[in-house]
Image (cartoon, rainbow, N blue to C red; front, top):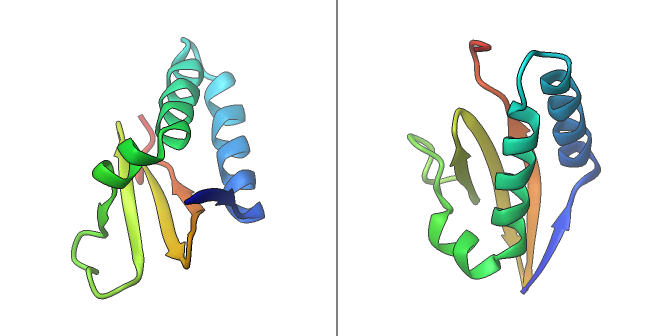
Length: 91
């Protein structure tokens, strides 16, 4: 299985990290490390990814990292990172 990242997901991740860098503390470093750990271990990712709560009929799965949600979709032998949602109510 290979991993691909959509342009939209890449943009969302970059924007989220830039936003966290402007805030006090090092939360951007921790989020970046956790996302990298998830994306680099496809076996671990497959175990952590669950159907979207309340929307299990959709072909997407999510991994929750703190209050951030990473959304994935499997197409043939490729796992696509399709989106990242930051917390609904910023910390």
